[in-house]
Length: 428
Ligand SMILES: Cc1cc2nc3c(=O)[nH]c(=O)nc-3n(C[C@H](O)[C@H](O)[C@H](O)COP(=O)(O)OP(=O)(O)OC[C@H]3O[C@@H](n4cnc5c(N)ncnc54)[C@H](O)[C@@H]3O)c2cc1C
Image (cartoon, rainbow, N blue to C red; front, top):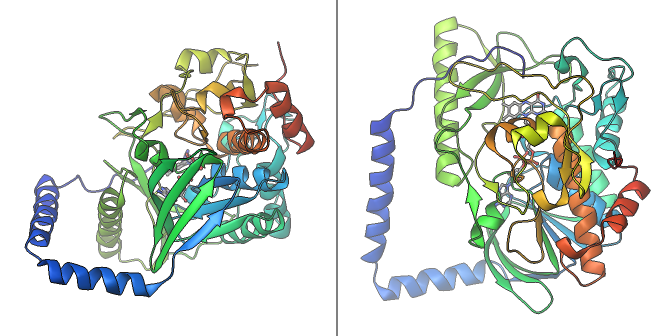
């Protein structure tokens, strides 16, 4: 994060226009297909694969730092859990994006985020023969206490932990339609060759950009200006996982909102890398499969965490986890992290994880209800793991007690979190 970023080529408005035109053209062409052709297409699709029906307590969508932790917590609490991921592995930005430097688990000389996320990170570092920073010491710069992970090992360990917790994993799938039922939700999902219907009591949306909340038509925020994404790669020398940071370049305008914006960001990032290889005449040694996205949609909850709340270390009455990181807003010219004042440790309230006006759905991760500056700090991986565990625990209790996340008593959430080694914010 502290590493200097190389700017990518500016966006090409003409290309964007051409892409839009092409999409328009193909959609228009679709209208001219005869009804007979439609019938044929439908029949051949149906014969591909029978519908899969799952009846579960909890559907977690998205398997980044937040989703993986939420699913393991829900599974360990005894909830029948399905974890759905549109990509090919667990870990999200940590693995598919290659940002394998989770932080920060400690603040001012002591650990403030532990539990399932920490367990996964710790085991991964131990199995890889890596080293840990000394959390009892306050580092000179925050990034000294980030953990260097082997992204490949981390994703396999995460799969093992999910399976041990009884969590079923569905890769290459995503929800398309949601219908409210008497007991929760009917979620129709699509993958290639697979049509799945999930009947669940609770949904945990950990898609990064609150995609499920968006499908439900609930309010979300997305700034006109967004932080750039970054594409991670390595040229000239081989990359030894967990030993050093990968090379990276900014992808301006990167947006994880849909397959078209993700495709555009990936094409832009890779094209710039290719130009760099030609210019520097160095070999390409490592390339992540996808751009890392810093910012897209955030939900609006009953609490919207402001930068004042964050930088003053406001203790929310309904706090469920801690977060700790400088305010870290990337712009076209780079980033200047603004460290927190000594002693400050911000908290994450339950009411910032529940979309306003919703029932039976909770979110965790970078889509947390917060203003843009607070979000630039809250979005980091350890914080996402802390809130992911809290969301998983809340959803499991809501499913068990046949209620909705906002009605689960806070003491019950705290109790379950402590049982699973999470650090719960102390009342001040
Ligand atoms: C370049 C960069 C550098 C960063 N540096 C650091 C750092 O040094 N340390 C740090 O701690 N943090 C860092 N961050 C921030 C941090 O990595 C992310 O904010 C955090 O990982 C987000 O976690 P998440 O679980 O909310 O979402 P993600 O990790 O984005 O996971 C979301 C998952 O949901 C899946 N998904 C999305 N939509 C759907 C759908 N409709 N259906 C099914 N699956 C779906 C995605 O494929 C993805 O796997 C950085 C971020 C970036 C981009």
